[in-house]
Length: 238
Image 1: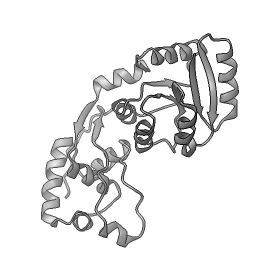
Image 2 (image 1 turned 30 degrees about the horizontal axis):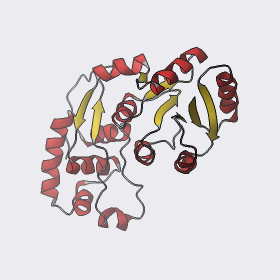
Image 3 (image 1 turned 120 degrees about the horizontal axis):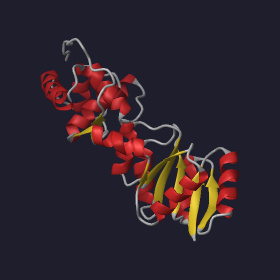
């Protein structure tokens, strides 16, 4: 029997899945957890085979990484309405075994969960097609810090203070990073960082922004081809 833990704050989803699995051999909805913050303790107590995780704003890449670390034997499946290529790609890298859409017919959802339990991946075809079209750029720790800080809106002087380097060094790093990622300016780099769910901690007071070193942040950015290629060249600002 495959025991499934559902994380969702929508009771109707729990009722619907419990009804669905009651007529399906080999699958059982063991429990529903309404708050992502309670998942780690519930998973430790229940030890489910599969976690069906409703993708809400609380579910970040950092959250997924911590969850996978605390329960490495549980197969995680994201249940989504929509998901960006960037987050899907990074979720795959973290070991998430499936991403299924809520609009799937019940039989397709059951099939996906059985594939995951059998050790296979269950990813939406549209997502896997987008993976082939995307380009992944692996970042060094310093480059990751720069992306995180740029995404927070810090200027070069503030970045230099946070990283305890000179402004000139920041400019050199940024010039190399622009070329590596393939962006034209810091705004475009910030957008890539935000799209890739940069894991920098929230910024509080101005003093803490400048006195503490930045976290490592994201490990890579996933770049998808633009729908409409940019026409005119833009100047690069450091």
